[in-house]
Length: 193
Image (tube, rainbow, N blue to C red; front, side):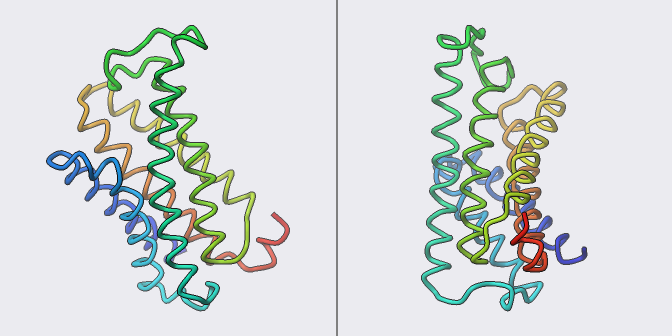
């Protein structure tokens, strides 16, 4: 359990860094979150000495880094599209700003969570060589929990940076924790899930 906490903390710190630098450099929020997530995952792997639980080959790390980068960009794009079209297709009232957290924001975030969860599981699969439906489900639940925590925090703050400042650290922490648990889960459990 201690090893998974290292992954949680690494993810949380990556999310904090992304949110902090995102205030002055918005491109960090567009393309920097995925690489920071991968860096946090690698740092946690190194701190827990998890190398023996991973598949060999430098190409796997390069592919995982690329997938991690694409994951966040694709999730952000999915969020924008789903949120933008929600009023037209789902009849939801449009939010003037994401901090209003109306139905279109919920729908956009839910769609982004699904895309991000699939991509993060692809990152874990690339590193471990094993796909886990349980980890995929946990990643979706972690993403939805992050959205809920952000919504609750946003009820008080109602500010863009508090929205990002909660969503990214909580989401990255939980996602990195799930990846860490998948890395450390015995091989026979992964095959059955």
